[in-house]
Length: 416
Length: 170
Ligand code: SF4
Image 1 (cartoon, rainbow over the protein chains, first blue to last red):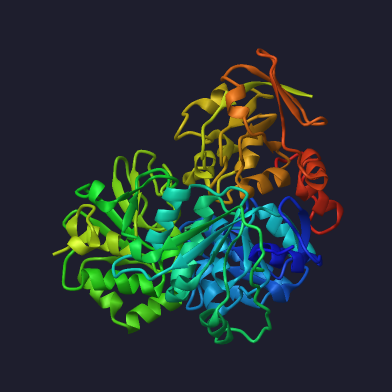
Image 2 (cartoon, rainbow over the protein chains, first blue to last red):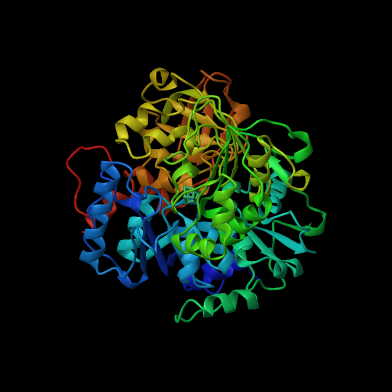
């Protein structure tokens, strides 16, 4: 019987000829990604053995640069840890650092057709690379780190066939907001993206959509392999890989066609993205205190370029804080070189170093009581970015940038 | 057999509500005191040891924060939901918190009623109404991990992590 991409990767990793929904499988893990969060005193265990140090990456991202002593202690502990176990893929604060999913992308750590786990829920971002990538908890991560294995319960797959091409001003984030609104959550299910329209989406755009799969509670989010992907990987890694395609007779729980031409910019109302997006016209005029562009989903060079295009020659509205966090120091550097930073800063934006910071209400952009924020990041849960009474709207980088200029939520095309 | 008073929660309850940002790196005890402070302030003082949580669809959506550990630490004996987020479920298995799926469960209970949960036979019964529903069985490998305190004790036995201090909370 035919298999979907996720099923085929899990079959390969578990040494079986085939798997199907409902199966419980133990798989070999190809890549384990650890974060600075893994080393906090309140959570960490003393690891005595690492299964395959060459398959481990340690990336500092949530609490960088260390804003307090607990983070500094965790970072210190982690530095000793990588030395002790001879882990070479270490991304400490510095030019090689960034949000883990962005670094994994840029360094080519997520190989097509393989299994990658990381103790962060947006690990599915690497599904853009045809990887069965899953966010797991700290205990699972330690299990994979020390044994080289983990388990999965194979879920059913929902297939989205992309056709057409996005119109200018409409982005991958809008595709996600459309899917979340129309099709809701996918708990226990895999999401598979493919179809002729996929080739019009950049690797960054695919990564945005894959990362946001966590917000649908998907198990795995996988894109079909294509030439763009293969070239992207070839530029980044010497390791060999075999991409996986779905068989023609693969069985899907459901199959939907998304016509990219038909999509418009959307905004999710506060607290959830599930069945909660609206056309911008319905929330237009909503006054904002903060506008944020960043996170593993929307801190790419494409996103900064789009923000710069929208705000060029304009100025952020008085009383609005416009914060931008590139997803990696490499993106920050590229944005500087391309002139985007100059444009953004001249318009009144505050650009931070690469960090998870504001995205999870950690530091550098935490919201106060009753504030309103429009964000191009991953989550708009109540209390996510700070005070419980703050309201968080979610939209694309273009919509967020336009709103920062207007001082209120506005359609990116409506900016004068 | 588990027997406990029921607390009901709705759909899409996320882990940021269980482990708010401000306690992300705090001690397990401090994290447990902050559970549901945004959506149900004061609940942690009302919940009693042995109570049962009943959730809606997609319970535990969101981040990898050890939310299941906090639900265990506030004293819940187990939880049942229409459906569970996969990452939340993984943490439940690994921290030894019994979390199960049971389609239809939300209709079966009103808050304050008493649930009888029979894990050996995968059956939950409302003590007041006498009605029952089947629980979706958990693979046997995971069930033993979940019931025997989670993955850390296994890793300790395998000599892969250092044994924890006697009775310290995970
Ligand atoms: S940027 Fe936000 S969503 Fe992405 S890994 Fe960091 S905290 Fe998680």
